[in-house]
Length: 589
Image (tube, rainbow, N blue to C red; front, side, top):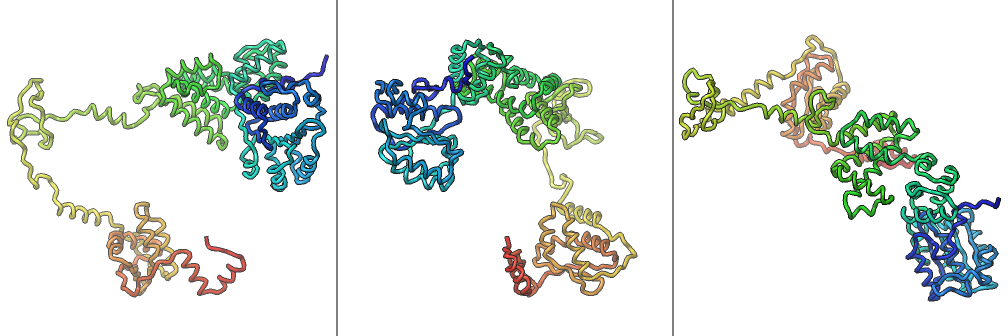
């Protein structure tokens, strides 16, 4: 039994034509070699496992090949190609920047660039994961990268282009590698399976490609794992079991149940999935991804965005026909909200269940039958239903006669109305227009003022602690005044804030006076004067308090200071405060 080699290494491309999914990029590199217009530094960037290092090795081999093919490929027959294939080439160096990222490592590399190649035309330095170099190493590498010796070519590879210094990027030709498509990955896996003599189901290979998330190396690693588990016959069900992936059929079923508002069956389906060991967060994320695919399948223009097999794409199209677009928008919003709150939830399963219930009620009718187990989605539907059942009282002839019990304030009825005997009669004096008089309104402005005054007197608070006459001082008065302002209702928050800037004073015990700065505020406080008096009498335990308000004179109006002005005033009045600030190096935010 020979030595086992994983598929990612065994089937690693050796020529540009065998590279999968990067046709435009490999064509550019071949044309560069054929024309002889080689740059001194290249940067290959892209996701993991898409062929960056592989293309760098193929490019390095082709550069030194002495017998290129007409299309720019290495011949694999000359001494330089044979030395590279056997791993003994002295012209191609690979450096892992993840573990050799210091300044000294870069200095050693620079020393090697000074030595010309013993055979071939170029010395090629491939630096993998170049973004891992330290700041000092990047700076030490700049000059050599910009003006290397004529026989040196640098090929840098990275998965995180954004971490590389702009000064490095400006010195390189940049090639962006693309993610592998699902179909391209499936085709390559079919080729590998046929070479290895492994039976497969296309749905299983599609599932592996989706799990790889655009990386061919990941796809080949998962393929080897599935082949070992399935013993040479890769089936869809076995791959599901091996990779612990939730079957897409569950998501199709959950969406159908949600459209039918079938919450009980939806809860049973969720319970069955959780019993198989799947996490609630993964279920919601998978359902959100499924509904996103259904949304993409509704429009032919967005259909190519589905990275799945042709048979699965048809299933998405079929379900998209029965799913309203508004349902999908709302369901995606609900699922995303659950994903955000899932980590911090103390009862994660309940959160998932409530999310599914909410999704199942999106298409619920507004009015449901009594006893259906669901309440109306909006209370206004109930009021609309009640309002539609209330019919206006018709106005019949003779309503203005003495003794009539019909309300004269109702609107005129149609030309014919139905009386108690179900007989149709015309309305008398149809053309006569009603005449309104101001006195018939029933309320004048004087009445409104009088009612408001009576209401004010009726609700004015009274002092309830009769007989109490405790002493109090200015400090206690100020404290109770501030506490009263803090307890004032929200609709009076503006007045409360202005009242906090006032300081009540004891003129002649127990008389309390408050000086108000402007007349508008004075009138506003006059309206709650009785309430203020009752509060102070209760809190200060003195029923003999006499509370008065007075408009401030010109010399009594003081400027309201902000926090910084108050702090500056404290520093001037108390030098110790300034000394403390300097000693602790404090600044007022």
